[in-house]
Image (cartoon, rainbow, N blue to C red; front, side):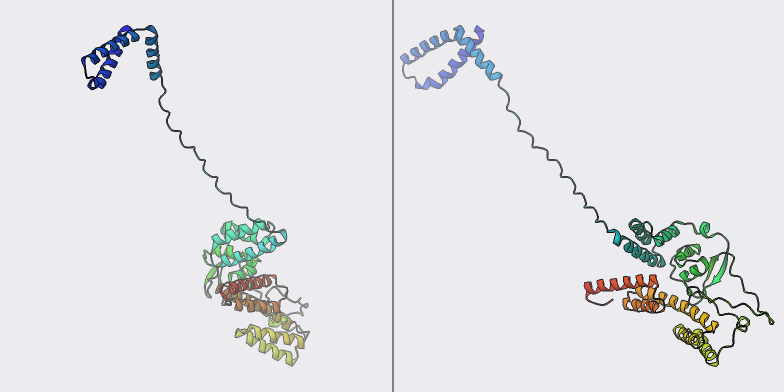
Length: 355
């Protein structure tokens, strides 16, 4: 401890001498400086001073190093906004909206857009699980046509006015089963059915009627054909059992037959109707009128669908009006006409032009 204090004193004296040496001007000053150094040395050797010096050194060594700056606070990322739930459709609007989606899916399937139709049908069944049309169409999309319709079939040559919907109604009992019939024939686009094309129809095929006998017994009066099922005209042998038509009625029947053969179904329907009114007992006129009416409704429906797909909304609405003139209770025509009218209104509001 004494040696450390002496070394510390010498260092201090040396610094002081170097700092004050130029200030000394006489020998007396130097002697006074030596005297001061001796007194300082005696002071440093004092135990109290030594303890104080050691304490200062220890305190200086024990001083804490400067603390590093605090780290910036971690900001938690903001939570992602939760999308607002879709507004629920009131129950009173759910069923009409589901039916509208199902009918739109019919058009999509007719054009071969299966994926779009599937989305629309799933929305329809969500809105109205009891919607029969949506469920039927979804089942056709998912079904295996060979398992659903069977492997037995007959070949059919497509006629000029045929469509898959018409053939499905005739041979499958439901016009909305057109899509599984298209899958049965590997037709990607059911609307592209051409006259003369040969397709497969599931089943054994229609049974040809037996030939009429020359001397047939009087047959019982046949019931009138239902209005919604196209019926062929009764064979000539069966007509012989009926009362003979009046000359006016017979002339009208000949005229209507010629109109129908030329493709003028509207004219033929009007003439058959006139023949039935002029001779109420002429069952042939009634049957031909009803069959022509069904064929005419089908034609108008195809023309309306084609016009709608071309965005000819006025033309589509006109055709649906003609269907409703023939059959005021036709629900499909009512819904399709409303859909065309709604689209026309939206296009007018958006573009300022008529559809």
